[in-house]
Amino acid sequence: MKIINDCTILVVDDTKANVAVLVEALKELYKLGVTLNGEDAIRFAQEKQPDLILLDIVMPGTDGLEVCQRLKSMPETQDIPIIFITAMDDLSHKTKGFDFGAVDYITKPFDVTEVKARVKTHLTLKLAQEALKNQNTILEEMVRERTLELRKAQIEIVSRLGKAAEYRDQDTGTHINRMSKYCRIMGKALGLSREEYERLDLASTMHDVGKIGISDNILLKPGKLDGKEWKSMKGHTRIGEQLLSGGSSQLLEAARVIAMTHHEKWDGTGYHQHLKGEEIPLEGRITCICDVFDALISRRPYKEPWPVDIALEEIKRGKGTFFDPELVDLFVSLQPEIMKIVEAHQDEML
Image (cartoon, rainbow, N blue to C red; front, side, top):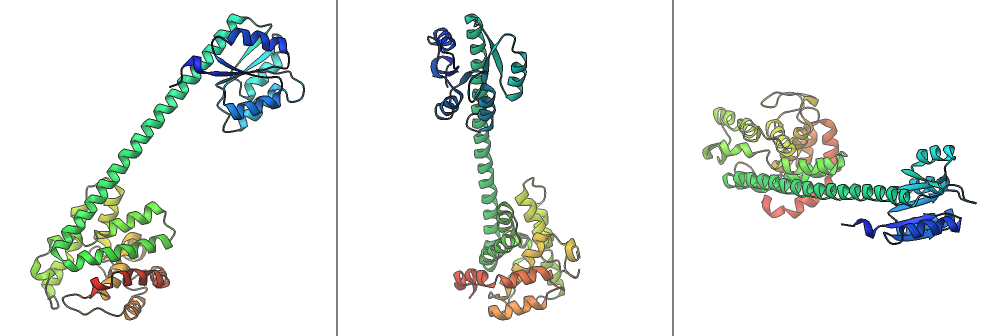
């Protein structure tokens, strides 16, 4: 941390006698720089970044008011405090000086005691402001680090919940990895922010976490489910919603919404809430398409994998009934990117 005696003061005055008085008063206390005109003062301030400027107002060429105005307009010099040097009866210049951003003024002829006192006061204030700014920067960095830790913890929770589902159903485990990638590219294509589509990617991995609560004889049955079994299977959306409820993070809330709504249909015939159209949250509508598509092209205990082109045709047949029609068009338009994901995970689906 800088101490006051390490501060640099720039003295700007076209009258050498005035400069000599100020230099003599301050040279034992601070580091000094001197210029005799406004343009040199601006260059010095930009290059050397003094801690304080003593600036004469009335100078030939670029006067002190213009120097002050220009320095205050530049980010690299706008925080340097400026004390104007002015004649005792120069009231109009004093007023303009404050309007232009000066912090104080020193009158001519100089009182050395006053000069030292005013300089010390404003340097002490500047150092205190810099210390506070540095402290705030440290605190902000601590907050960023803590936020990152919490984010990592959330991702770890998501990952472990996904693994829990994978232990129950190996198909679910590989399926969620692919399906979440489809969701990510759809979110990105929709113009969601990076934070939003990354959250969609992570949250969608928990869409079937409720299957943890479904018995093995139903979950792993190789044939078609009967009515009672199907009713029990549909309960995984409610179970997932309950497992993910009560959290305060946006990630877990998005996961809760997806778990509950990814089997809702555009025409209102889905389950469990029978939501219709845009009543279904966007996350649920996106996940629904991605979930069905990946299920169609994957091997299941009760079915062989479908070819991708046939699966896409099935998605298009559900446009406006099963799926959001605009999202269907988007999904189909993203076929080249989707195929990259499919091809990268081909072995998992066979």
